Amino acid sequence: MIIFYNKTTGQITGTIDGRIHGKEHLNMWVGPKDDNARLVIMWAKNKKGFFEPNVQDKSFKNILTELDKKKLNIYDFVIDTDKATLIKKEQNG
Image 1 (cartoon, rainbow, N blue to C red):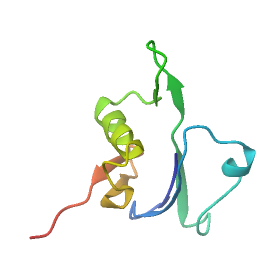
Image 2 (image 1 turned 90 degrees about the vertical axis):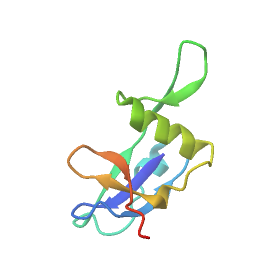
Image 3 (image 1 turned 30 degrees about the horizontal axis):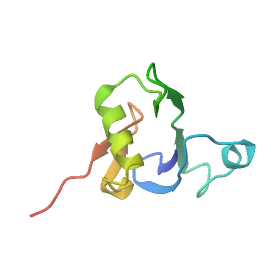
C-alpha cells in the first residue's frame, strides 16, 4: 500500500492499494510533491508463509492488516507526520 498525505496536517490525500508495487506505482504521486509526502508499506512473508506488513510497530501492523481485510477505512485515519504511522481521527459527538 502506498499512502499519500499532506506533510503538514497528515491528512490522507490518496492511496494505491496492494502489497507489491512495481516501478509504475512507485513513480506515481498524488498532489504536489512540495505539499505531500508518501508512505510506502512493504509486505513480506512471515514464518508461516503469509504476507504481513513489514513494520516493527505491532499496533501499526494491526491497523494495516485490518485495512487490507477491508475492515477499516483508510480515510478514518491521518498520518502522524513525526512517526510516519497511522492514527485514528478524533470522533466528534
